[in-house]
Image 1 (tube, rainbow, N blue to C red):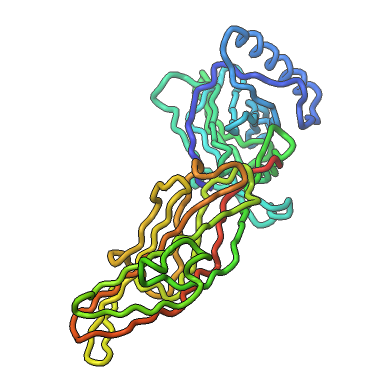
Image 2 (tube, helix red, strand yellow):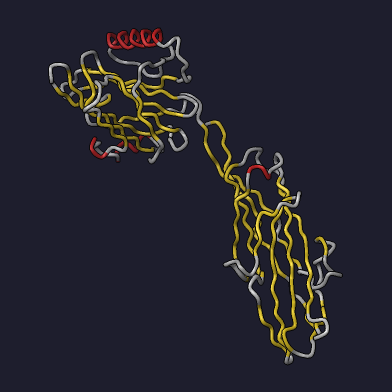
Length: 357
């Protein structure tokens, strides 16, 4: 799991009174409670982010001695894994690993943790002695149902060193933070429109807004005296019933036979150049995209575009599309040209919505 992370030296730590896990050792529980009260007192005059204490575990040595504690707290935006050592001990290194999970049986497959392979690692040697330390991890990509392993190499004032692990020696620990703090789950929401079959007009006289225009075929006459014919068709793409807040919205359209690249049509000794364009815009006329002969696409293809949040009006998104056609007689005595139907299918917009877990 790749998460943004920063490591900070913890000078004060706020604990809430409602603690999520019970310790089997009553004496150690009393010690933790007293430390929490002392730290709370020292921090009264500082601005603190509201954190909820979710889990705490002892840092145990290979002989099962408790040499410190690991506390996991959750705030609005972060999960913080706090390391605190008993008096007289300091950190040489700290490391942390967190694995995503879908259920508790996954722990049977995670194996034995190897501290040197952990995602988060900090070397504290060479600096001021540190007995409290924290890893601060963004909640954006953090799965509240996970496994974690915390390791540290520590030393005391007498030069003695010890490896310590959170809760159980060289083991991953089940972590369920779903009921601790506020968590949001992202789901994809999609709204689609009906497929549309239409004709792009070939002349100004038959151009307009669909369905008043573009529902029947056109015929235009090209001659050396009047070699060019142009037309346009405007259509609405109105989406309703969208979530009030949709992030990373993507509009998708599948075009059938959209001739963006110039086609040369030969008939009866005449050569005609034909091309079309597509423009997507807002109701206010702001152009969002243009597809023309410079585009990589042509013919039948699926096209997508990201839609900014500002374009939504509550649960609605109103867009306009404009098609143009252009015919030019390149050589010949003259010819009648008719258009054929085209389609937009699989029109839809999808985005992510967040809801409280």
